[in-house]
Amino acid sequence: MKVAFATTDSINVDEHFGRCGTFAIYDVTDEGYQFIEVRKFADGRDSAVEDSKDDKLLHEDLLQKKVDRLDDCRLIYLMAIGGPSAARLARKGIMPVKINKVVSIKESLTQLVDKLKTSPPPWLKKVMNSK
Image (cartoon, rainbow, N blue to C red; front, side):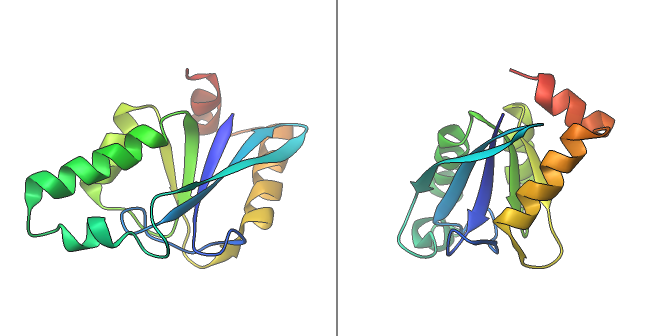
């Protein structure tokens, strides 16, 4: 399954979904993981999304386009996400995974593979079997 990581440096999970300009995409199985690509929405922070907050229609359109470009991923690791964006992801069958502190993508991947090898929780089994 494909997993996305909201990142500023392609090393750490350290960004909020809406303002994230870069997502690192990996293919993950219970046997390991492999880097696929970086999906870039902006250099640095996604200022187009941030600057559109006063224009609700434009803001929602930009967020939806981001969700659509990530719709082949089953999980997205991130620092924070707003309720409307989380709902958009859920409608596409994508589970946002909020983390409380900056953590390396490698550490997140290692923990995810370990969960997949042992006994994944029900929510993870459901995500793995979707699409």
